[in-house]
Image (cartoon, rainbow, N blue to C red; front, side):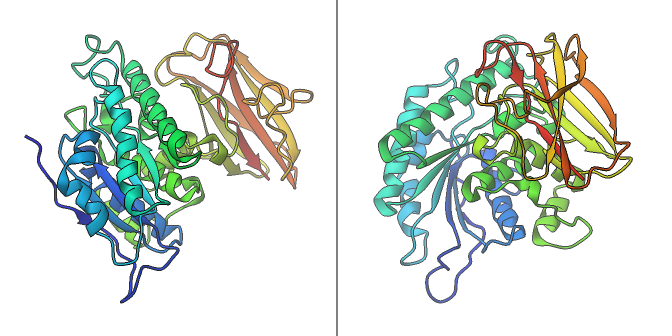
Length: 405
């Protein structure tokens, strides 16, 4: 039996009259994947506040185990559209998270999933004609779940089915109401870049652990506000509402840094600093610190840089790997290449910094020491594995990382 969670009005920015025009109104449809760890919607609101935005008005209409069909047709779910906003307000976004299997070819019904996604937007736009949609792509079960290798060969294969149909549902909505009406948020891809490691999940290997909920909220924030979360650096020694909430979940500054890098890595390419092929090939870097996927970092004379290239799901483990280096005047980043837009360095001048015979099962780490000072310049590193990607039959490329003096 499905359990109906109470609607949660998590953050209200209003006076006696309507909400301030710039404050966003967000309606969440989902189930326990959204509800766990204090709810993803609550953290979206706290991230927005931390970023200096007016606190959004967040309503979460959550039903345990529900599919999008329930949210589309259940009378109480439809009623949230009309009854939960202050007078004279409209919805900015409806965030849709389907049941964890419904978007898979193997275990679900992708046709119904896609039709119901379109139907929910129609419902919301009946009240708020300019409302947009965020498709919250869920994740595969963790490594070690009973689904593998029987139902699905690997978590990566399960993730591929989910990603495909969330992408198609996004396309369907845009085909009806125009490009930009729907945005595909990809927490499931971020979890995949964690290698579907069980340590990040709840003990059932299905529901999200706190880091996954933070990653989800970051991805949804970026989709709604079109801002990268790596640009935010909360003070975990302070007492902001965001920091207090995250520390109550056992999360710290390192968790923020790691999840922010992954959230930005799986954001829409238009928002990423130096996007590559968007495949299972990940570049992480650190300056005198542990590595993360944040693509922009400051350096100075004598800086030690670590560059770690990995294939968290092993897709590129046996592929030969090159790491390229380019230098440019700050503000004059060379990419994308006209022929190979996934390459972000200038092919005419970039150097092969290092090459290895394969990415390897645990990835490759390359140390870099900076024995010089180039004031006003930046260094760009990008890893290229020689195995097919969706963009190119010959190679795939990580996002590039830029280090500025």
